[in-house]
Image 1 (cartoon, rainbow, N blue to C red):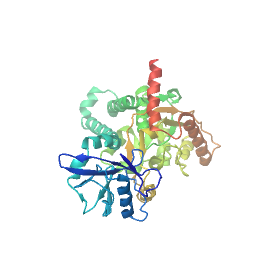
Image 2: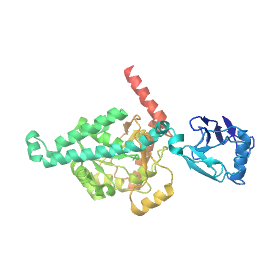
Image 3: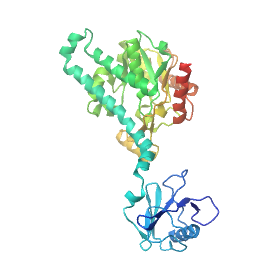
Image 4: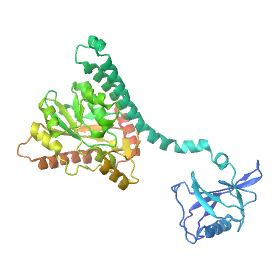
Length: 407
């Protein structure tokens, strides 16, 4: 293997060159590939043009042929790359081609190890496919609820309580099982949740709020209390979501409707950051509430306590793409639709921390109450979350916790 620097200097090499002779076709192959620690899309500065780069390559090759994504009739030697005319990125290597020296011939099948490529790309592919599992579970929830609705007469004979109770128990068990198996999900501070009085939960919004799904399910199963939730309006335009909103009490949420729900002695959960925080938040867990005061007005009008909750490692379970954020932000502000791609589904430890309730105070204005709740939630984050968040550390944390429980 020959280390190559395109400018011919003693600077760290930009590419590696490998030598290989194909006995089956009696020809030489050439690959110029970035070192393993360099991003595969890295390209050297153009400088005086690719012709000089070709000369540098020929100088460093010192007469040896090289394996790669171009086929030659003869080995590479000094000057044989001088007719190099074009370059292009393909796969994980840099393809060098020349009309006079190289013969391109079925390079995809011949020069790329498909098994190796699949092995290398598998984590990336899986990280983008796992979010679809959440969508699948949502549609499974929708189907289950539709079944209960369509067969309500038969089901009512089997259930003495309300029509949706049986369905809610089943759906809650489904999500709780997923949270326990995949994330080892737990709640710390369950005793702080009231058994028979209203309260407003304020939480940090992850890229996909799976922690909220698990939290709602666990509370419903253990305390038999259904927590109403506020969701972004775009969700109500998705086919199949209406049945979920009907059965699980998901609402678009205005100050008046939220206040009414709390006055009826219910529990309600709101993420002030909403979809904006979900899309553009990152591993530093900064609150992105802007000047939103709706939740504070709701709590003051209904005269209920606010309970801050935060799920440790929620940003390590699912993350949003950071490339092209300016464009995606413009699209979101114009359409109010979340365009930011999400990847992840990593089986990190998820632990929801329930903070101390903030009691109703008639002397607090909505602005003062917002600041007070934000400070309480930020304290929860600083106390329980390693910042910046790390996927590997979150995975290791789950292993450590499991070992402690066994001990």
